[in-house]
Image (cartoon, helix red, strand yellow):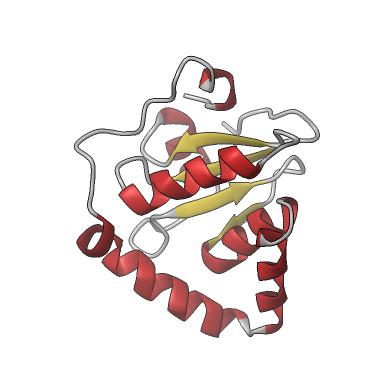
Length: 139
């Protein structure tokens, strides 16, 4: 079952135990002045439901997904660039990388994703938001 998210919001699904992913979520929260992004971990019930609905192979995509209000899903570099596009300058400028063919962008993205635990570490449990941020996290 897909979650109903408000019309103007986007849901970022992230690896809740990955330090790089958690730091990226913190960055988005800090720079998302319009508060359009909501968050959930890939490991949680909502994340698992979305993964199942879209038949996503978690052996190939296991770090970030973007679920849109119109019930579309984006993965890997496309998800990251679509998130950047919704933030302010200078991050928004990263969207210039849309000109790079997807297979090249995703190859770079996959290389980083494959090594993220080795390079950035891993938590024992999923990120737990502070009470102030709790309303932006779906569980």
